[in-house]
Image (tube, rainbow, N blue to C red; front, side, top):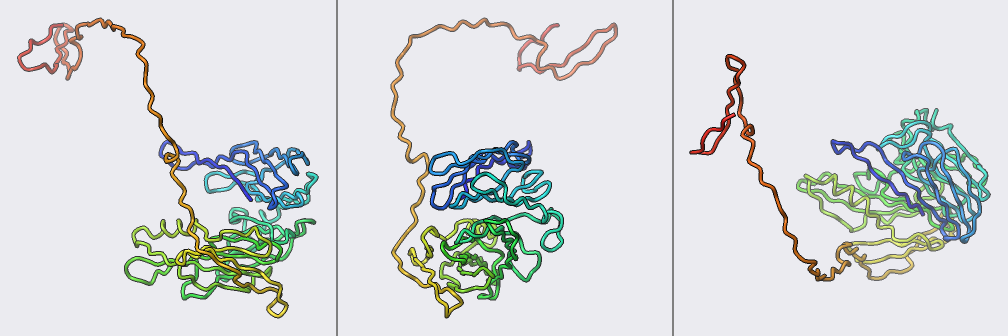
Length: 368
């Protein structure tokens, strides 16, 4: 849903100095609506020019006084996202945090800067760095993911009514306690279309074993109040990591989500690595189980395609070069100036200078 192009700029020492953001586009889940966002600065500070199309036809275009750092587009043409008045510099942000919603005619429905000053728990804007955002599965709410402000939950999700801009109660995403050691944070979050439910992927690291470490995944489905309706439990997708490089390996595992598809109505697909399987689940209305139940609806053997290296698809054809003739190069040889390769000099009486110069064995010393 989001395609964001970013470039890391490095200073002379190789340190990241800022995050340059280029024009990027977003589209709705159906693909009918598309938006192009063109920042006026490389840090996404200040205004931007936005163009929104429906089925290839212009719906609206205008300059906004802010720039979306991240944005989503609903199937009714509503554009929503967040940004910073001072932009993004490296991994830090400047100025006030802004959450905004723009309707299908280009009219700003919400421009909320209140959390930059006070925040959910009285924090200053420097503590508020969204982890991402998405629309709920019914496209009624904009959800902005932020870090938890205390240890009782994993994340705090701000929620806005998409069609009015009204601030709704925040959701505290509780960390599962299936294992003795809880995960550090969700690896991925996705709404389940046609439902008020969210699919959450967790990655767990076992630090208790002696040599090397183990990591595993599991999945939960939570409702709009943060309650867990379904859990896969720890999958048997275990990964062995070396102690000396476990942090890098763990982050790489977290970055490779096993959520394969959430585009199907009231359904989702997961990759169970150890079983080499693509497993489909359905979300079914069930009043007896809190409104919804999750059931496996099918599976098939599946292995992800390994992306070929770009060079593998390039075929180099041999090329014969035709001779264009020969040309003689004339070089004028000049004697080497003896006043080179000097090791030092010493002033003498009468203003003379004695030079010390390295010469080859047997060679006559130069005269000046």
